[in-house]
Image (cartoon, rainbow, N blue to C red):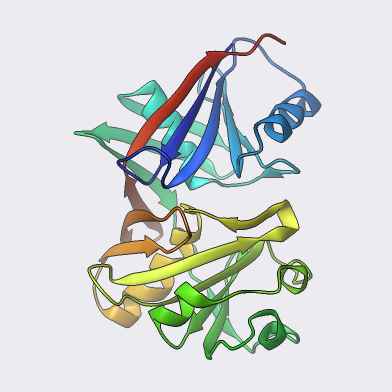
Length: 250
């Protein structure tokens, strides 16, 4: 079986979010796929069958939706692809170096800050908190706070969610800035998170009064996501770079 490592949401190697992509030639057991993902040690490794059934595994668990590994898989396969996934059918199109992905929107609901959130995000100004399908979204006082926040990942892992997104209005070219922390699923900080932008777009579009957003994920590796909200769908666009191509021998 062929295996790739692709840096997603970037146009240069060793930036963005690396994902493993395994092109399955035959069905494999869940435990085998989980073991491969643990061996790869990337935030997610994608496994795709010849008929385009797509699944995603972190080093510790299978997840319901992953943007950067979907982008990586579409980049490897090229053309237009329809993937059957736990989150429904996801359509991806390659166009002049960009991959455009059609994902479900995730409008978060405003909630009271959960107990322990202030301690989990020390020295941060919490303006509002919302709960999406997977994550807690926390709007901070400024983009500078998003860039500098140092969460207590042990406390973050205790919240009943996949993880915590911190976000603010952008301070430069980008409309919004974010970072994503997922210690509960084995990822202290995810470099660039496509699925989180289903929540981010749904949160920010009505506040910024524009349907198209240029989003920066301000992790140490960094990455850029273009997001367009259209009713109950979000179009996520990004670039990708293949940095490794090999074969699995087991």
